[in-house]
Length: 405
Image (cartoon, rainbow, N blue to C red; front, side, top):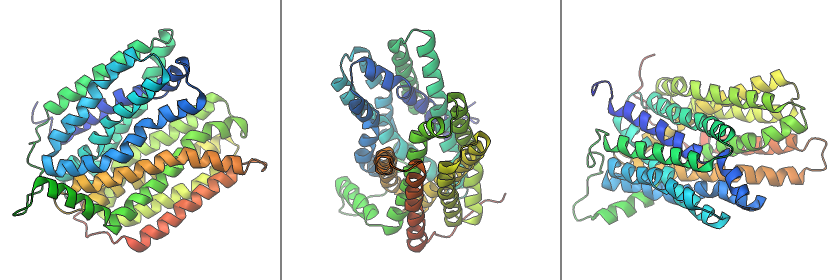
């Protein structure tokens, strides 16, 4: 059994279980819960985005600390926030404490995500893109299953929020247990300390080094541009599809589902191809595909065409993300994956948090147009294209030690 449960497979299991519990506390449970507590729409939006804001501030120091203290210690800290804050949902009775709790619960993914990705990157030099693709897919299986399970529980228990949050807490405790069982030495991933340098100096210099690395920042900004478009599509496609294209809620679910399926299924293969042909061409191809699909979606009103375009957008996501994660790890110095992936996660979260806000403003700006979504999606597509040009000009991918297909 131990031979079958390699460190990589256990990391994938931990990621799946952690995301399953964490996302179950979000959509569709969280907005309904916040509304029932009396939160105004503006406060509901802030509550939904609170955990992402935590990630913006915490991912970089968490990743850098994992280089200093070891991956396992930091993953245990992240798992602590998966396991214990969910019990506080049971005693929340008003919106403001719920907002504070969401900031606290956000420490879970803010700490765990960059450190776990760094642990995967540590395990593999050759084949790194494929393994990061599998790891990302395992996480997203949990993320995709969670809203369905949470919605079913609410539907069949007359909105029993306590039951949902108890299940979230149970999955968090399981995450903590699985991290305890990880066969990853707490010191094996540390960057060696130079003579006369303290751990604090090492931590500080790692952050300074990674935030001054133009290539890491450019690659991370490109991923943020991608997730700016993801935020636009996921947040506003349901409104466009129902109000402009005239689709039913069930048809909207199919469109979003096809996007998710292609994103999930394509990541391992796309990561493997990036090991073979190089990170940069894969990233540019995926980003250009997403940039093309976004305005096309904004002018399409046929259900079948929206399904195809949504699936192609998901394919573009699948191509970009594992290759970019692997590229950032490739660009970082040996053992310093945590700091690099921490800044990567921070900038990624900025793009994801900004997406719905920017799109909301643009739709208001173009409100007089017959279809405000088309110019809005076109502007976001333009941002992606500019990001692709900057990425192509500034990032020089290191030589690949790929695997054979």
